[in-house]
Image 1 (tube, rainbow, N blue to C red):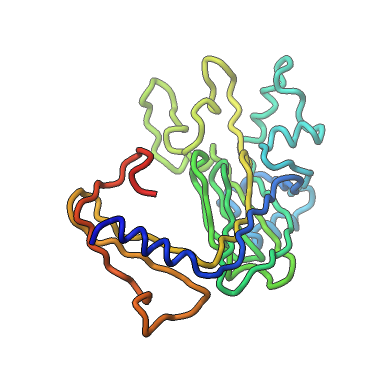
Image 2 (cartoon, rainbow, N blue to C red):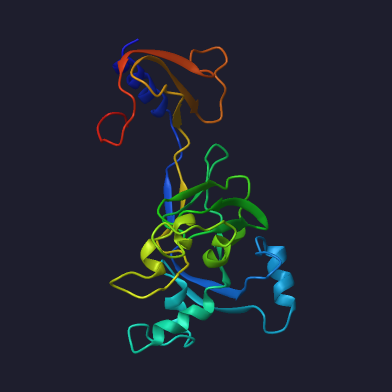
Length: 278
């Protein structure tokens, strides 16, 4: 079956009536809590945070701005000096063994039962667990990529949701690896997907940061949608499977039901080049 026919049929799936898409920014003011990462192991859930908070003067909270990073928030709170002045940058070292938690509340957006809600972090630095209403949404370990999670079944219907992002100390977590020097020094950054310049460079001092350094969004896609899956990673003939959702209706007696195989007479394997498949 020609590829053009496949794409035309895929487009046909998308023309069914659907609720409008929404893109809601969660940028702005958050709360930032921080504490020393326990020797017995990092805190990875809200219950662990409550235990830390039970100890006097252990957990502290300040306002935070997203997008941003913890050093900027500490500066605004008067806990750090201007890092470009004098030797103030060395003040950051005392926080390298700390954990951080960004938290905020947001209302559940209006959506139909056929729509999904996706929580997207455009940049999360770096080793984190994401919690919504006390339930684990997902984890992150790479500051260079976006992280998107389906939260449809975790939001409070027509209510307000408690979002927490708990970040572990990248410096302490790197010590879990048997570090071997590859450049004549202790390359802790080789095991953590962070900007290498944070560990010190010829153009700037060491500032091993953390934070939600790019925007956070709540996406509600339109409910008429397709998902393309299982394209063999080689050129030639293959099967294109289109999974679809149309208003929550199962078309058992129609051709639009389940996985629909399409044979592609000639296709090229995906590569990092625009204009091949979209």
